[in-house]
Length: 455
Image (tube, rainbow, N blue to C red):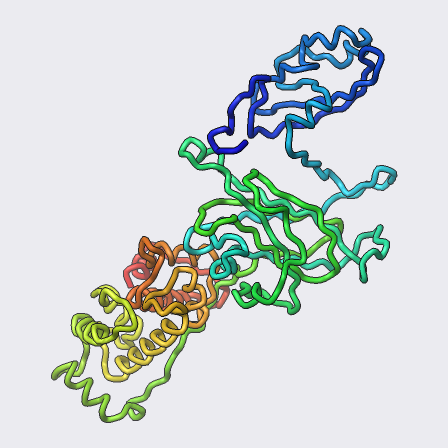
């Protein structure tokens, strides 16, 4: 196969390109006085069968012992057929051997694999980081941790220390459904990295810059599944599945088989928040700021959402180092809702000072994460920005943020960034107020739910 268009094409000898055939048997027969090696195959996706040598009703069967022919020759259109081993070698380019159980051929003991299965997604702009060639985004791929404590029973000390055998299989899901829309199989692969410290934190770009893979799959290939058998010293490892190119949407299933029980988990599945909370008292506010506030707020000394929008956008217009379309009235209302302690719908002096300090903190994070000085944050950089701001989010939430706040070019400007920070602070604040027993679970009546969503 040289192009995607050739997939599903039927050859002149009735083999279907791109199909995964099953090898169901192998036999040796005497053909015209010499041994001939045969392979039995099955096409599980249809009734199209091989029509070359040793196919059903092929003339080669006339020169085989009738009893052996009767035992081997099936004349049913069930997709199963025989072919010469030499033809098999010419017609097929890849043979994958299934590892059913870890039993040895000579052992009488029954052993079973210990299986761990993860389902995940690559999502454009958040978790589709591509392969190691794309250093700026590779670290944003989904990450899984495995701990190998028990060595194999049959370890013979071939390595410096006892080793553990695992099978890793990465399968892309639901690609056949998208074939009608012109979507071909993605080129996929994975790498394993040894972890020095016990950590549950998503590994950053610096980790991959200083660590080389302890093992990896074969070169990236557009197969439905890639797999390999690996022997590793005892320890903790990080598994990173990825597509070859970044920004490719896809779903996958990652399976890890081990001879002994292994501890596994998805990295970054913890959701928590510890945002910046400045403690401001009236006496801590300098006279210059008080005078400025009085000018901005008017006689009532309270800042409304419209006044807040005017104030912030006047400041933004003067900044040439950051890009922004200006704060929307809804964002300003959310800022007031977050900090309005007395329910007036406005901000007093202390509340406004607190908000001002928060925005300054957000600005410092924004500029720190903007590594290319573009004035915007790349959607992959947003993961670092959230961590700097005190938020620990899983991949699903990371993707939700990209969908809501990133533009079509997958960048987030300053007003979008602040809006995201304010929204997250509000959501965590409301949840913590309702989670009275700190169980991490809340139950809401319809009225309570509506009140929360309208905050």
